Length: 362
Image (tube, rainbow, N blue to C red; front, top):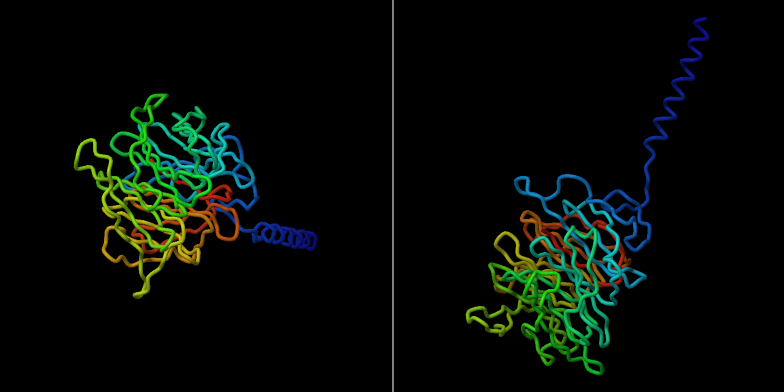
């Protein structure tokens, strides 16, 4: 009887060892920030996607919601991703029936998300809005007609209104002015007007995206000058009521060890802990972060991350959160920093695109 018991004990031990070995086998496939494998889809992991789990945000229990918007990799849809902490992302389907062939933009005002889309030639600049965190949308409303843009837009909330910057496309020329439009209400049908023109066509030869940012209740626009590859900002002159002019440009091209690091064609900016940070794409497709309001700013590379499109930037008060398209694939990645110098993450957030993604937080 003892021999039989010993025999069964040996068999049981072998069975348990095999089970344990099977359980801890490593999955070596590349993972995204959620632990999911790359699937090559357009951000279509499901019609809803949820909110990425409880918690989120930072700084004394505050709650922050992050949204990512991107043109589909192989479609014209505007796809949406969501997160509560900036690191764990889920897909949230598309922005209704909206279509775009350029990089979208987004802003948040008084409980409402606004997204912006456009067509390259002669198309309308359109906006959509959602009052339920992107679950449903009122779509295809017009900001302005027959202007068209071949370059992505940007948007911010400033002075209790939404502002959107559009690089106007003029067929047959590389001179493209940047216009800013302003919404005057937060109703279901905002009244949009042409607010100002921070960059004329002669200033923006070959055309780049103007990226709006707000810092200390002042409105800024950032851009890369195509002819010199140097990075600049302009500040809106708000000293005179009703004024629509912008102050002269200020260069913020960064340097490392005394060497100037030129830009390429995209820059993003955001206010964070008393500083105004800009991240721009360099000639090597690396990204450089600079403190924009410091004279002759020292630059800090965003790790070894590279992008073939352009970055977008937001902050939750504790972390800067950067979103960008990968250099060699279509995945949308994120990186985070507390000081604009040291960056972590560089992991797949959610979705795929061939254009620049756009990130907001609220």
